[in-house]
Image 1: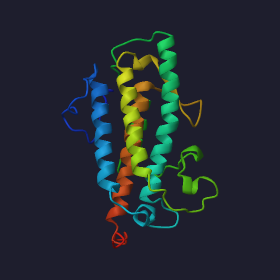
Image 2: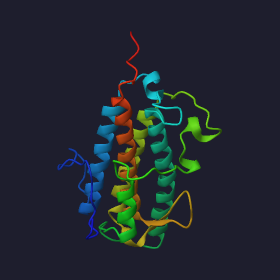
Image 3: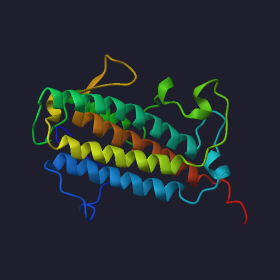
Image 4: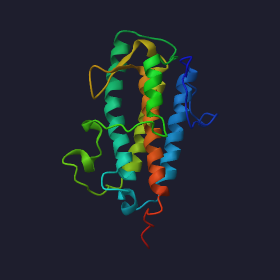
Length: 218
């Protein structure tokens, strides 16, 4: 991380069979990372019933379903911002080969989000899970949290492919939370991946809790 090279956690060394190669190694590493996130999410939540998805270790804690919902809400808003940035880059012909390096602040921000958590971070209101978004009242999961998360990872991977013909260093993504926070495109992808790893880590801790409910019979 000290050199500005992209550090990707949890990826497998090979590309997924049938996927076209990406021109920049940084983009290829991020695609492997997002494929790994899909596998991690399936291992975490596939087969869980609604009671298990909605179980909270404490009243103020989030459930596995809420962590997935939070990740999906974050991805949806960031994808909107990324799409605006990509459209502007095409209009201004900010072409390149997709390669990038992380700056000092970007490396710090990504490292801050990586698991295990170094400090507690409060989620912005726009990213709050549906059950917590309005009044903080708890409600059960809808049951589609895993499918939604997986589908959004596919959308992120599609944007990585689109970035291969552009210059991520010259493309700024405006944060959905504050217009004052502008990340370069490559850093925005890295932040999304680190953020997802953090919350899937939380999900695994919940599932490992000795109080975690057993699956409903039959």
